[in-house]
Each structure stands twice: as structure tokens, then as C-alpha cells.
Image 1 (cartoon, rainbow, N blue to C red):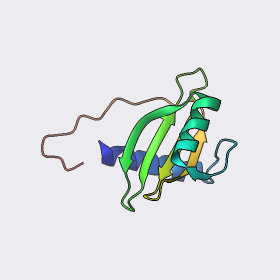
Image 2: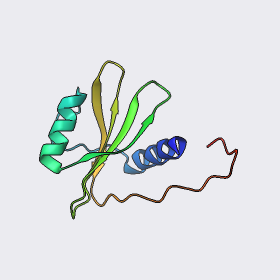
Image 3: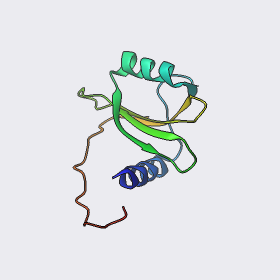
Image 4: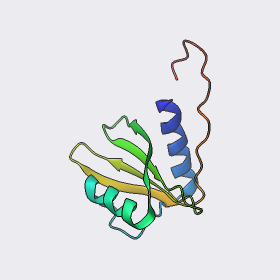
Length: 103
């Protein structure tokens, strides 16, 4: 599932081209980023995964009509950078993997 999330997030970022972040500094301390996204957009973490570079990739989303979302990566030093944001986010059902499938 984690590999699926990472692949889907990478595909999303590649599809978006130039990342667009909410009106905030692109990199800040993780707590500040989460607080701003919660206060300004009612976004909360809905998915998380470990990137190969040691960063933690998170998808934050709101349950509002807009379905706003933000994708951030937090590095081991605690700094979080916004990679992408947008609207109309929706969760897909988890894929059913065959037993023994490494993904």
C-alpha cells in the first residue's frame, strides 16, 4: 500500500508540472505547516509514506465541498516543504494485492 501511495503521489506531482502551494512559505517547520493548513483550509493528514531519501511524504485533505488537498514532504531535520496543492481530492479504495506481492 505504501508503494502504491508513493507511486500515485509521484504520478500526481509529475502530472501537475510546476507544483503550486497554498499561500504560505514553501518550507517551514512541520508543526507550523500543519497548523496553517488546518486553520486556513481545514486539512488534516489522510495518507503517509516513507520516501527513499528519508523524507516522510504526507497527503493532507479537507472534507469540505472543495476537497482541497496539499502534499508535503518532511525531512529528518523537521522541515516540511509543500510539493503540490489543489481541489477535488478523493480517496480511492485500497488495491487488493495478491498474497506474496511485494507491492
